[in-house]
Length: 301
Image (cartoon, rainbow, N blue to C red):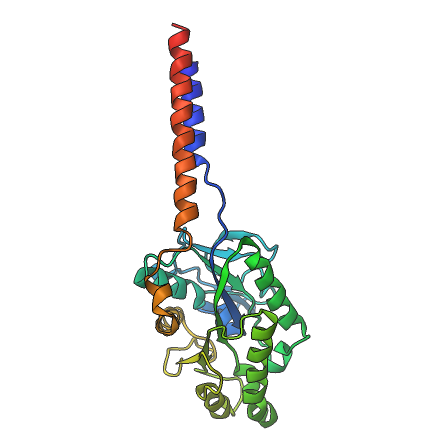
């Protein structure tokens, strides 16, 4: 009986791991290609969209990658990252998971990553202006993510396909996107927040080059642009394929790591201390329970 009790207690001790909020926060915002449409195709029989469910190795879950759910809870991240955010669309593979896995592969001491999905498919840049639902949701979700004491490392931004439809929207894209970045930095109180944005690979209208030109001109400090042109597209000629999303995520990871100060890149992991402490507590508890159990067994003999 006491041996059984000992095994149960020890098993519980091993399973106890105090939850630690991630210290490296990344905002994922924009429209469908950021939300993820890799592997999503049209089912002609049912006239619906379906995701093939294929998750490449670069997008596999990792205990060091968490995501902020729609209910503002930290959960283990997995594809599709925007399933409970971009709820009116079918989501597939996006750049968030390959980005995160690439960062952790290239910098094993980086620490736990917390992704904050905010992208909504089909949205125009004007829908992201300050005071809008999308803007307020992004600020609110990011502030909730910071409650555990984390640091916003970057905004990952992929948007603009909807702004290629009319000439007016295309010509105003530079002004509107710059204003969005400035406002977001101000309201998040991170004046030099790194921004990794994507230059369009496709568009919904004829004015793709005008929007791309605006995206390739980095007038603001600490903004880096990754060019998605040439990456393979799904049959709809609008959304990136799963391999393309993997490649894009890796390109964004390279751009982010190049923008980081060397003190952050080579310094100790922000999560090392709490992780080591929690392991110490777990091991101490396990040893204490073992000793108590042995004492009980010896006393009853």
